[in-house]
Image (tube, rainbow, N blue to C red; front, side, top):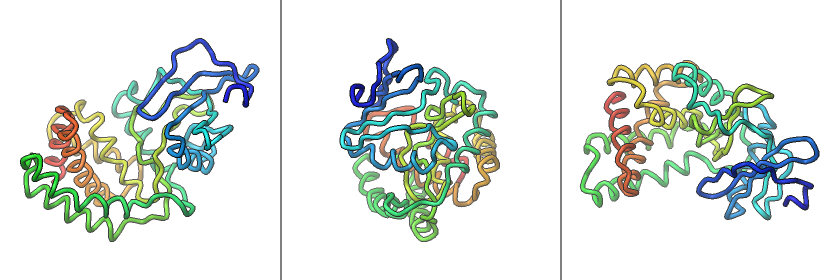
Amino acid sequence: MCQRWGLAVENEVAHNGYHGIVLPVRRGEEPYVLKLTWPANRAVDEARALAIWDGHGAVRMFEADLDHGAMLLERLNARQTLRDLNLTEAVAVAGRLLRRLAVPAPRGFRQLTDLVNDLAPTLDERQESLGHPVPDTWLEAARDLSQQLEDCTDNRLLIHADLHYGNILAGERESWLAIDPKPVAGDPEHAVPELLWTRVDEVEGAVGVRRLFAALIESGALDAEKARSWAIVRCVDYWLWGIEHGLTGDPKRCQRIIQALM
């Protein structure tokens, strides 16, 4: 890809996730990053979403070779994420970005109604297999709310479905820009629980959780009841997923959030 796009790799640390690496590169005097994703088809929806946003609230994409899972992206400051900002300021930035990235969705993106429809039938079986870690009344609430969300979710908006503080980096063109989208068509309120559980340790008690929730609703101009429903459903799902994968801290965070919002 460097040969094809005329790039020189810089002598800096490459960043990696579960499904890809990001390399700092230059083309002439211009800095970029080269993102390589595998399997390559995981880059298709990400590239489509970045092309639609075209740098408005998200990292800008300059080239894409989806057969090889490659994208040439704007260089942001990987050493400064929204996790470095105090919580009050970070919530304000994240909420505004969440709303800004919710734009009309073209056909072809996965829909939240399909995702929640696939999720709901798994809850009882996972709860049973794990020895009922989630209070049964909470699991029942999550099941009921998932049905309501399936009925009322608006699939006309494109959203960043993995928008947490670590996926918002400092930039020069704009102060803060989102990266690494998992785009779907649905409600922006879907992202609220992730913005809760990733920094809920910084607030005290149920009152602190509710204040954090309210701040996200206000900054993102979101529907509070729909955001509450997504928070309960996704926290129950993540609680179970965390136990299935040997996590200890995140299930407790999910428990705190549900207890505060129920």
